[in-house]
Length: 62
Image 1: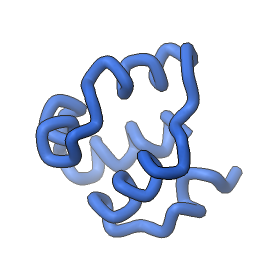
Image 2: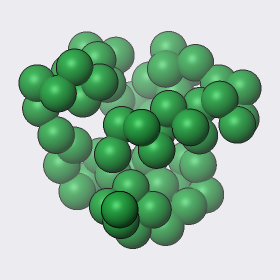
Image 3: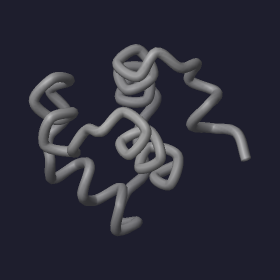
Image 4: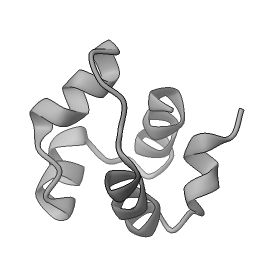
């Protein structure tokens, strides 16, 4: 999932900090996803999907 998130960051020229500020998802949460400490819950995936204007399945698919 995080690889797809990173791809969107690059494509849209955004930082995780900006996404955190705009979505209310804590930077520590995004960092935990990056390090594999935790996986995003559905509610957070919905927020990211809406923010990036992609379907939730984008993050869930292979």
